[in-house]
Every structure is written in C-alpha cells, then in structure tokens.
Image (cartoon, rainbow, N blue to C red; front, side, top):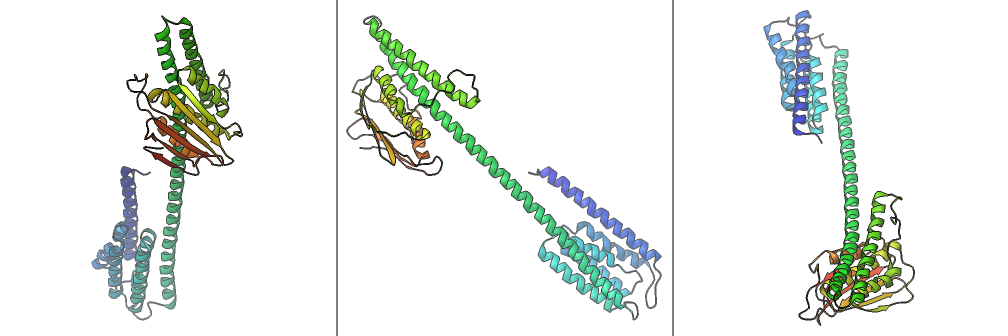
Length: 405
C-alpha cells in the first residue's frame, strides 16, 4: 500500500514533469513565432503574439487538476491567434492539451475535450484568409486531433487496466493472507483444546489422588501407595500425549513416543478405569457394536467424554453416568451427574474453565448438536451428537446452554 508521503512525492514529480512539458511547448512556440514569415493575408510576429504564447502552452502544467478549464484557456488563445491571422500555426499546443486531458482525466472530460477541440479547429480553419487553409490543412489538422485523442484514450485505458490488475492482485493477496490467518487461528484453537483436555483431566486426577494419598498416608499405606501409583500413571499418560502433540508440531521423528496414536473411543475403558481409580464412581451404558469411527470424530468423542468426566470430578458429584450410543449415521454421548452433596469440599482447581467451550467447538466442527447445563433435579448434563458423515469446517451444528433434562 502506498503511504501518504509517497503519494505526495509522486504527485510532486508529476507536477514537475507537466511543468517541464509546458515550458518546452512555450519554447517551441516562441521559436516558431520568431522564425515564421507571414504569408498573403497574414500578420507578422508582434508583442501580442508572444503574449498569447503563454496561455497557449503553460496551462498544460495544471491540466491534471483542472482539465476543462486549462483546455478552454488554450482554445481561447488558439481562437485569438486564428482571428488575428498570425502566421504561426499553434496547433501543436492544442494537440498536446487534448492528449493530456484524454490520458489523465475521465471519459466524460475526454469526450468534452474532443468536441471542443474539433469545434475550435474547424472554426479556426474556416476564418483563415483565402488560400491559407488548404484541403490538406483541413485533413491533417482534424486527423491530428483524432490521433491525439485516441492516443490519450489508449493511455488512460492501459493505466486503468493496470490499476485493476494491481487491485485484483492486492485483493487476492489479502484473501490468501486472511485464509492463512484463519488456518493458523484454527490450528491454535485445536492445539489449545487438546492441551486443555490433556492438562485439565490429568491435573484433576493427580489432584484428587494426591489428596487421597496424603489423607491415607498415616492410616492405610497400601491405599496411599495405590493413589501415588495412579498419579504416576496419569502423569506418564499425559506426557505421552503431549510428546505426540509436540511431534506433530515439530515434525520430529526422534522424539520418543511422538508418533503414539491419538486416543479414541477404543481407549475409553482405560479412561474410565483411571477415573474410577481417582475415586469418582462411574456408571456406564455403552453400545457394544460401535463401528470404527473416522479418526477425527473418534478423537473428538474421546475428548468430550474425558472433559465431561473431568468436570464431574471438579464440580459434580460422586457418580458420573456415561451413556454412549451409535447408529449408522451418528454417535451420541451423554455424561451427567446428580450434583455434589451439600457440605462437600470443592476439589483442587474447582474454578470455571474453557472445557464446555472446547466441547461445543469440537461438535460444531462436524455439524452436530451440543447441549450443556444444569439439570432441574440437580447436577449437570452434557449431551453431544456427532454425525459420522460430517466433514470438518463445512457444517455448523446447533448448540444450546442452560437447564437441560
């Protein structure tokens, strides 16, 4: 994009060039007046002829700013020359001005300039003394007017085409940059969702198990040891998943475990076992014949169950009810709880987060339906429907929030 200072600099350069052309035209006009001998019925050079040379040529310097006014000034001096019957023919100034207006103004001003120049040229030739304006003079003068106008029109058209091409190129570049920015934002959002799901779930399990181990350390060594073992297992699992994500980001095959497969519904049993080990009761109703799912849908479904259970561990209570059903066209997930018992001490990290937002975005990518909110009878419920034929980024689903059944 051109800066204002650059535009001012370019305009100053253009004004200087136009002024230089005007001075050259004035010089040519002065030389012609001084060297041209008058013919029959014509007047010789005098002071008035030199004075008229100024309005005949110098208006070219400002023809871009005031096209019609500059042209009228030139044509007025041209008409005065014709009426006075000076020997010098000042047509070159008219042709230059017509070219400039046609090249540097709009179509309306260009056509107006052509009409005025043709009228002025015909009038000037018609009032010349007998024998001065021959048929060849008529032909060459009108032809020169047409050539000057057509050359200016061609110059303006070429400049407009180049400007349109540059504008289109700039627009395409802006669109490409916008697509790149959207792609980067989408990838950042996906990474943020995965990191949130991994860290939030693992830290919740670790917090619960650490608190349990600390509580049982002096009373039940074996139970405390099992709690610490669960902390170790959860942390190792989180490290494996984070290495996998880093491997994708870095594209580095040398990171141990960086190419571990992404979790999916096949690993739901291990997830539920870890949650139960953390002290949360889990009641499940899961279809036995869930078919192989598309990889992205498989990961999204796993993350939704994982995040919902994490929220129950943080905010809900003592039992989570997980219901997963699958048909030929969609996978339905429901996770609910009956709410925390009165007087229960909140778990570590019991603060609002971005889990529901992340789940809603995951479902929306595939054109599914999502709802989350408190149940009228107490507790919280998350429900998601994932179409198995959905394509990421094409359809947008329906999401609701607030009290749900």
